[in-house]
Each structure stands twice: as C-alpha cells, then as structure tokens.
Amino acid sequence: MLEVKNISKIYGEGTAKVVALSNVSLRVDEGDFIAVMGPSGSGKSTLLNIIGGLDNLSGGEVILDGKRIDSLDENALVDVRRGKIAYVFQQYHLIPSLTALENVLLPLTFGGANNGGQKALDILTRVGLDKRAQHKPSQLSGGEQQRVAIARALVNDPSLILADEPTGNMDRKTGKEILALFGQLNSEGRSIVMVTHDPEIAGYAKEVVVLQDGQIVHKINQEGGNKC
Amino acid sequence: MKLYQIVMKDIRRRKKRILYASLGVVVGITTIIAVLTTALAGQTNIYGQLEKYGANLMVMPAISDIDIGLGGLSLGTLAIGENYISEDRLPEIRQIADGMIREALNIEDEGDIVTIAPKLYMNTKVNGTSVIVVGIDPPEERLLKTWWRVSQGKYLEAPGEALVGAIAAELLKFNVGDRLTLDGEEVTVAGILEETGSNEDYQVFVPLDTAQEAFDKEGLVSSIDIRALCNACPTSDIASAINENMAGIRAVAVTQIAETEMGMLEKLSGFLFALAAITLAVGCFGVVNTMTASVHERIKDIGIMKAVGASRNQIMKIFFYEAIIVGVAGGLLGYVAGTLLAHIIGPLILGGVAVSYVAQYFLPSLALATLIAVIASVYPAFRASRIKVADSFRSL
Image (cartoon, rainbow over all chains, first blue to last red; front, side, top):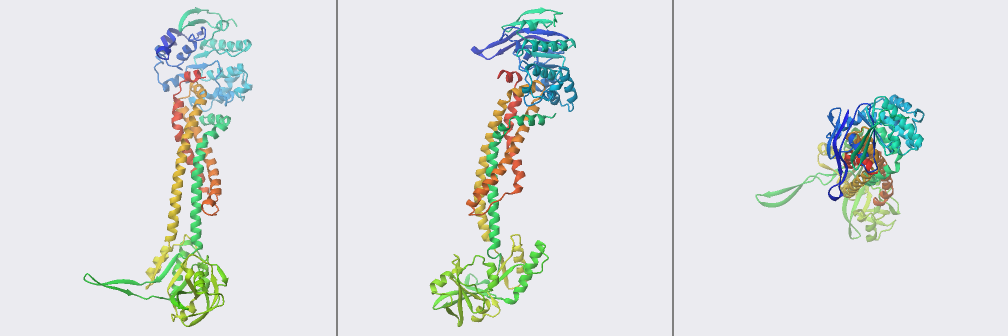
C-alpha cells in the first residue's frame, strides 16, 4: 500500500549540510507492523515524517496506493491526512484547551463532519477512556494522553498508523499497555510503522528496520514475534 | 464541534494574551471615541447656546439702493422704500413664523411660539453726547437677551424708565434715579446693565412706546428680532416665507455665528481625528505584532491541527476568528475608555461643558475595531497557514 523509493533528505546547505536520510527504500503492505530502530540522529523520525507527508524530501518517491504523494501540494496532502494515514506522537500532541473527547473530535471537525460526538465517544471507550472524556490533557496521565492521541488517530479509520516513539515518555507498564493496543489495531488489519530506539519494544513488530546515519543497515523479519 | 468553538476554548485559556493583543485596538478606538464624543458634546453645546442666546431671524425694512447713472457717469444712489416697519405687521410675522414651526415640528399648541422683539433705534444727544437710544418691548427683549444682567437698579418695568448700557452710564455719569431728556421727553434711569462686550454697552434702552412718543415715530419700529426655540426650527424657510408674503420688509436668518463656531470646532475635531487615525494605525501594527507572537506561541498547536487534517484555510480561519474576538474586546474596552476620557477631558477643552456617553457610537466602534484586528491579522494568519508540520514540531 505504501512504498518509499530511494529517498534522501538533506538539511541545510554548504558546510552546514546534514544528510538525514540517504537512499532509503521501504515497503509497507497491508497488515504490516514495522519497527524503525536506530540511535538518535539516525533519521528515524525524519523517515516517518516523510512517509506521512509531514516533511518534504530532497530526493526519491513516496507512493501511496499507486499515487505519488511526495510531490503533492498542501491542499492535496490534507486529504491524505484526513484519510488513510494517521499519526501518534511521542509527546502526544494534544490541544491543551480541548477535552479528551474534543481532541478526538478534532480530525472530524476539520474534515467537516458535524456530528461525530458518538463516534468519538465509542473510540474513546475502545481505548478505555470513556470515563475521562471530559478531562483536559493536563488532568490525564501520560498513558491516558497517549490513548487519547491513539483514539484521535483512529477516528478517521486510517489503514496506516505512523507512531513516533509512542511509549517514549512512559513507564514500562503503561508502555506495554499502549503497545498491546497497537498490536490489537494491527490484528484488525491496520498497518503500523513505529519508530523506537528500544529493542524490547521493537520486539512487538513483525518487521524491524534498523537505520544508521540515514541509511538502512538491517531489515529483520520476525513474523509471529508478537509476544505480548 | 465547530472551528469557532475550538477558538473560543483556546481563548478562554489565554485571556491575558487576548487582552494584550487587543491593547493596540483599544488605544486607537479610545482616542477616536474620545474625540467624537467630545466633538459631539461641543456641537450640542453650540446649538444649545444658539438656542439660549440671541435671535434666529432679523426682519428689517426693505430698503434698496439703486445706482443712478447716465451712461458711464455715476450720479449717486437713490434709496427706495421706508426706513421703518409698521407695528401693525407684527401679528402677520408671528402668524407666518409660528405657523411654519407648528408645521415643521407637528405642534398642536395654539399659544405663541417665537419671541418677537421689535426695536426702534434713534440717534440722539444726551447732555451733549451722541448716544443711540433703543426702544424695546421689555418682556420680549428680556427673553431674547438672556445674557443681560442688571448691575444696579432694576430692569425696565414701566413707561418713562430707561436702562443704560455699562459704558454709556460711565461716560454720561448716570446713576439709578437720574433723569435724562430724550428729545424733550424725560425718563428716569431705572437700571444699569452689566458690561456685555457688545455695542449694547453704549446704548440706552427705553420702552418702545416711550421711544416712539419721544421721537414722533408712533407705531413704527426699525427692526424686529425673532427667536425660535429650537435648532431644528426652519429659520431659513421662515425668512423666505416672510420675504415672499410681505412686501416692504426683508427677513434674514442668522446662521453665520453658528457657522463660524461650528467651523472652528470642525477644524479642531478634524485635527484630533487625524491624530486618532494615526493612533489607530499604530495600534494596528501593535495587533500585527501580537498576532505574529500568537502564531509563534501556537506553532505547535498549528502543527498538531495540520497533522490531524486542518487545511490552510481552516488555520487562517482560526486566526481570523481570534482576530474578531480581539477586535470585539478591543472595541468594547475602547468605547468605554474613550467615553471616560471624553467625560474627563471634554469639560477641560470645552470650558466646563459636561460630556456624556454616546450610545450610537457603540456598534460602530465594535465594527471598526474588528475590521482593524482582522486586517492586522491577515499576514500573521497567512504565515500560520504556511507552517510545515515537521518544522513546527522541530522548533520545540
């Protein structure tokens, strides 16, 4: 469903030039669960941002369902973000002034849906936060906030979820719960690409891609490695 | 949930920021409202003074000077017509003036409306000094000359009495009770007027009948002052009507004094208004600044919203909604502050005239403030809409 071909990303110019990604290719099929590993600065987050059209690239192609999305303009990218692809971030990135429910509603609001209240509440129930629907992010724990963020990602029913260190700010127990949730989403047929630097977390994925200095150095298939 | 609801919820969290952002608008609107409110009070005051003081109309004999010439040679001028108006014509003048005001203002009342003060001017010598003696209708004249104060003695009450202008009294060494002879007719000085600063100070006032008898002008007057009670009264129309319907007299509406005073006030308010406009423009830059700061402050939120599907237009809309709230808040505060400012400063400028709020300025001040805030937000909103999601997260 998604293919990344020979992409490169260069920040800055001249002597300040930093090569974040160089000649990276990756294929995400339906039902895949890929963990992108590597030390910090290896280009993991940049790769994820480029896959989702959050950042522009310096070379190469990103193809989603047979259509190139790397050359799309902002307005066309909006449709991609409202449809197939959703994000979960390490810092949750919830809007602080909105309640959990309103944060989940946000993608529907921007998508022009008028009555998503019940749908948003159903999804919050699914991530186990229906009782916290009217709480503001500041009143929620890190794990709860990430569940809200996952619910927000799910509200448009995406087929690909991109997660950037989703458990990076959590204790082990909470992190495991979140990973279990991702495993569940994957078993529903959603593809997941997750950036992490923790080998244990990468162990939940079916496939591990290791990045170093902007290049893929390993691809490990660990099919059936869902060892909850 | 709607876009504006997102903005409202966010603003509740940042009340101080919004107040700060609206400050530029507040200063501008404050100045404009203060100027306008003060100017309006000044205008109302001038109208009020016109209502209190003096005549709105003057009626004089219609004397025309006709140039007499023979070819290119001038042989002087010939005055045609009477120098006096017959007192018999007063009722007709009243009928025209009252009738037109009744019609214009929808008044049913049958009583007299305008004040009609006939005068007979005579130049005579008193104790060898030349003075102007004015025969007046004492009660009517009193209504007209509200600024008259009697410094000694009393106002005219009976025939055979005289009221002397301040300077005339000084020059002629008149005191209350003195007797003077006007063309053979003896009168008693009943009172002396306070100085008014006009040529009234040099005049001697006697009842009309007394003057007419003394100078053998029975039933005649030199001119008639007419005072309508209101500034909405159709004085020019009354003048025209009198001129059309009555031969031998000429009526003139006195608007000149009003125009001069208004002109000065207009110049002053024009200058202040320009100052206010500059303040508003500066305030506009202030809003640009704070809105740009607001974009920076919310760069992460903008990134989040874009990441979950907000379009450029929606991001711009969010900032415009915020601008509208900033504008309404600014307009509201500016109206209140401007009114207070006018209330405090107005009396200092207008010489003690009380200045109160002007309700009809309220909505325009909200509208103007909102317009300014929205205009000032165009560029920041555009900038916000161009923010790249990845950049917004990196900047943290």
